Amino acid sequence: MLRNEWYAIKARPGTQRKASPRVGETDERKGEFIIERTLRDAGFEVFMPSFRRDIKHHRTKELHERRFAMLVGYCFVNLPTREFFRLSRVDGVTAILGVAGCPLRIADKLIEDLYDAEASAQSTLERERSARRKRTRRELQEEFPEGKVVTIAASHRLVGGMLATVLDVTSRNTVKTLVETLSGLVRVEVPLELIDRVA
Image 1 (cartoon, rainbow, N blue to C red):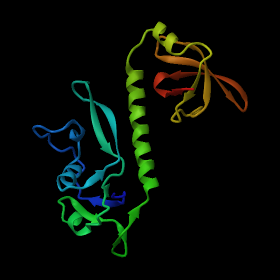
Image 2: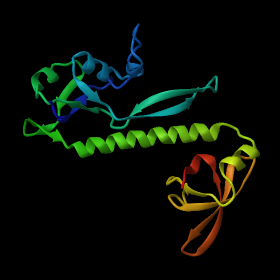
Image 3: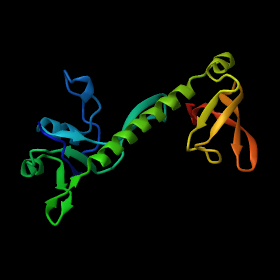
Image 4: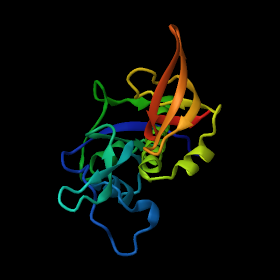
Protein backbone atom coordinates (compact mmCIF):
# COMPACT_ATOMS: atom_id res chain seq x y z
CA MET A 1 0.00 0.00 0.00
CA LEU A 2 1.31 3.45 -0.90
CA ARG A 3 1.65 6.00 1.88
CA ASN A 4 1.10 9.73 1.68
CA GLU A 5 4.14 11.83 0.80
CA TRP A 6 3.13 15.42 0.18
CA TYR A 7 5.38 17.88 -1.62
CA ALA A 8 4.77 21.58 -2.24
CA ILE A 9 4.99 22.95 -5.74
CA LYS A 10 5.09 26.50 -7.03
CA ALA A 11 2.46 27.16 -9.67
CA ARG A 12 3.00 29.42 -12.67
CA PRO A 13 1.15 32.76 -12.35
CA GLY A 14 -2.32 32.58 -13.84
CA THR A 15 -2.82 28.87 -13.24
CA GLN A 16 -4.83 29.47 -10.07
CA ARG A 17 -7.73 30.80 -12.11
CA LYS A 18 -10.84 28.71 -12.54
CA ALA A 19 -10.54 26.23 -15.40
CA SER A 20 -13.17 26.39 -18.12
CA PRO A 21 -15.88 23.74 -17.72
CA ARG A 22 -15.69 20.50 -19.70
CA VAL A 23 -18.53 18.48 -21.18
CA GLY A 24 -19.27 15.43 -19.01
CA GLU A 25 -17.19 16.70 -16.10
CA THR A 26 -17.76 14.92 -12.77
CA ASP A 27 -19.17 16.93 -9.86
CA GLU A 28 -16.02 16.71 -7.72
CA ARG A 29 -13.95 18.29 -10.51
CA LYS A 30 -16.27 21.22 -11.19
CA GLY A 31 -14.79 24.56 -10.19
CA GLU A 32 -11.20 23.33 -10.11
CA PHE A 33 -8.26 25.60 -10.86
CA ILE A 34 -6.16 25.25 -14.02
CA ILE A 35 -3.15 23.86 -12.11
CA GLU A 36 -5.35 21.28 -10.38
CA ARG A 37 -6.77 20.14 -13.71
CA THR A 38 -3.39 19.76 -15.40
CA LEU A 39 -1.95 17.84 -12.44
CA ARG A 40 -4.96 15.51 -12.19
CA ASP A 41 -4.94 14.97 -15.95
CA ALA A 42 -1.27 13.98 -15.63
CA GLY A 43 -2.23 11.37 -12.98
CA PHE A 44 -1.18 13.17 -9.79
CA GLU A 45 -3.17 13.53 -6.58
CA VAL A 46 -3.30 17.25 -5.81
CA PHE A 47 -4.48 19.32 -2.85
CA MET A 48 -5.03 23.04 -3.27
CA PRO A 49 -6.19 24.61 0.02
CA SER A 50 -9.01 26.99 -0.84
CA PHE A 51 -12.03 28.77 0.53
CA ARG A 52 -15.28 29.94 -1.03
CA ARG A 53 -16.93 33.34 -0.78
CA ASP A 54 -20.20 34.77 -1.96
CA ILE A 55 -19.35 37.81 -4.09
CA LYS A 56 -21.99 40.42 -4.95
CA HIS A 57 -22.08 41.30 -8.64
CA HIS A 58 -21.45 45.04 -9.05
CA ARG A 59 -24.32 45.60 -11.47
CA THR A 60 -26.98 42.95 -10.83
CA LYS A 61 -26.29 42.72 -7.06
CA GLU A 62 -26.70 38.94 -7.27
CA LEU A 63 -24.47 36.75 -5.10
CA HIS A 64 -22.11 34.38 -6.91
CA GLU A 65 -19.97 31.78 -5.18
CA ARG A 66 -16.26 32.08 -5.99
CA ARG A 67 -13.34 29.94 -4.93
CA PHE A 68 -10.02 31.43 -3.80
CA ALA A 69 -6.68 29.79 -3.03
CA MET A 70 -5.48 29.99 0.59
CA LEU A 71 -1.83 29.82 -0.42
CA VAL A 72 -1.56 31.86 -3.59
CA GLY A 73 0.97 30.39 -5.98
CA TYR A 74 1.39 27.04 -4.21
CA CYS A 75 -0.32 23.66 -4.02
CA PHE A 76 0.54 20.19 -2.72
CA VAL A 77 1.03 16.94 -4.60
CA ASN A 78 0.94 13.46 -3.07
CA LEU A 79 3.96 11.75 -4.60
CA PRO A 80 4.73 8.41 -2.88
CA THR A 81 6.43 7.17 -6.08
CA ARG A 82 8.82 10.18 -6.02
CA GLU A 83 8.51 10.85 -9.75
CA PHE A 84 9.90 14.36 -9.44
CA PHE A 85 11.06 14.65 -13.04
CA ARG A 86 7.61 13.71 -14.41
CA LEU A 87 6.02 16.20 -11.98
CA SER A 88 8.38 18.99 -13.04
CA ARG A 89 7.40 18.44 -16.71
CA VAL A 90 3.69 19.16 -16.05
CA ASP A 91 2.50 22.42 -17.59
CA GLY A 92 2.05 25.06 -14.89
CA VAL A 93 4.60 23.66 -12.42
CA THR A 94 7.51 26.07 -12.09
CA ALA A 95 9.30 24.47 -9.14
CA ILE A 96 9.15 21.73 -6.53
CA LEU A 97 9.99 23.29 -3.19
CA GLY A 98 12.99 21.88 -1.37
CA VAL A 99 16.38 22.56 0.14
CA ALA A 100 19.64 22.51 -1.86
CA GLY A 101 17.97 20.94 -4.88
CA CYS A 102 16.37 18.13 -2.87
CA PRO A 103 12.52 18.20 -2.68
CA LEU A 104 11.29 18.69 0.88
CA ARG A 105 8.53 16.40 2.15
CA ILE A 106 5.66 18.23 3.89
CA ALA A 107 4.57 16.73 7.23
CA ASP A 108 1.17 15.02 7.25
CA LYS A 109 0.17 17.14 10.28
CA LEU A 110 0.55 20.34 8.23
CA ILE A 111 -1.65 18.92 5.46
CA GLU A 112 -4.26 17.91 8.07
CA ASP A 113 -4.17 21.45 9.49
CA LEU A 114 -4.82 22.83 6.00
CA TYR A 115 -7.75 20.43 5.56
CA ASP A 116 -9.10 21.68 8.93
CA ALA A 117 -8.68 25.30 7.81
CA GLU A 118 -10.65 24.49 4.65
CA ALA A 119 -13.45 22.92 6.71
CA SER A 120 -13.48 25.93 9.03
CA ALA A 121 -13.77 28.31 6.06
CA GLN A 122 -16.65 26.22 4.69
CA SER A 123 -18.50 26.36 8.00
CA THR A 124 -17.99 30.14 8.10
CA LEU A 125 -19.52 30.44 4.63
CA GLU A 126 -22.51 28.32 5.66
CA ARG A 127 -22.93 30.42 8.83
CA GLU A 128 -22.88 33.64 6.79
CA ARG A 129 -25.43 32.24 4.33
CA SER A 130 -27.66 31.13 7.16
CA ALA A 131 -27.43 34.56 8.80
CA ARG A 132 -28.23 36.31 5.51
CA ARG A 133 -31.55 34.49 5.27
CA LYS A 134 -34.22 36.71 6.79
CA ARG A 135 -36.07 34.90 9.55
CA THR A 136 -39.03 35.85 11.67
CA ARG A 137 -38.64 36.62 15.34
CA ARG A 138 -40.53 33.42 16.19
CA GLU A 139 -38.09 31.29 14.14
CA LEU A 140 -35.17 32.94 15.92
CA GLN A 141 -36.77 32.34 19.32
CA GLU A 142 -37.10 28.63 18.49
CA GLU A 143 -33.47 28.44 17.35
CA PHE A 144 -32.10 30.56 20.21
CA PRO A 145 -34.35 30.08 23.26
CA GLU A 146 -33.71 32.17 26.38
CA GLY A 147 -30.96 30.68 28.54
CA LYS A 148 -29.22 28.81 25.70
CA VAL A 149 -25.41 29.06 25.70
CA VAL A 150 -23.72 30.03 22.40
CA THR A 151 -20.14 30.72 21.31
CA ILE A 152 -19.39 34.08 19.71
CA ALA A 153 -17.15 33.93 16.62
CA ALA A 154 -13.51 34.91 17.09
CA SER A 155 -13.93 37.72 14.55
CA HIS A 156 -16.01 39.78 17.01
CA ARG A 157 -13.88 42.74 18.15
CA LEU A 158 -14.70 42.72 21.84
CA VAL A 159 -16.03 39.34 22.95
CA GLY A 160 -14.81 36.98 20.20
CA GLY A 161 -14.45 33.36 21.25
CA MET A 162 -16.40 33.80 24.49
CA LEU A 163 -19.45 31.91 25.68
CA ALA A 164 -22.67 33.91 25.93
CA THR A 165 -26.12 33.22 27.37
CA VAL A 166 -29.07 34.14 25.18
CA LEU A 167 -31.42 36.73 26.69
CA ASP A 168 -33.68 37.50 23.72
CA VAL A 169 -33.76 37.79 19.94
CA THR A 170 -34.65 40.76 17.75
CA SER A 171 -36.34 41.06 14.39
CA ARG A 172 -33.09 42.55 12.97
CA ASN A 173 -31.41 39.10 12.86
CA THR A 174 -29.47 39.76 16.06
CA VAL A 175 -29.39 37.98 19.41
CA LYS A 176 -29.22 39.78 22.75
CA THR A 177 -26.74 37.93 24.94
CA LEU A 178 -25.08 38.15 28.32
CA VAL A 179 -21.30 37.62 28.36
CA GLU A 180 -19.26 37.04 31.50
CA THR A 181 -16.00 39.02 31.43
CA LEU A 182 -13.36 39.78 34.03
CA SER A 183 -15.09 43.05 34.87
CA GLY A 184 -18.52 41.42 35.28
CA LEU A 185 -21.54 40.60 33.13
CA VAL A 186 -21.89 42.53 29.88
CA ARG A 187 -24.96 42.72 27.62
CA VAL A 188 -24.00 42.34 23.95
CA GLU A 189 -26.23 42.34 20.86
CA VAL A 190 -24.61 39.91 18.41
CA PRO A 191 -25.47 39.59 14.69
CA LEU A 192 -26.35 36.04 13.63
CA GLU A 193 -23.28 35.75 11.39
CA LEU A 194 -21.07 36.16 14.48
CA ILE A 195 -22.65 33.31 16.43
CA ASP A 196 -20.17 30.52 15.86
CA ARG A 197 -21.96 27.53 17.33
CA VAL A 198 -24.46 26.57 19.93
CA ALA A 199 -22.65 25.15 22.97
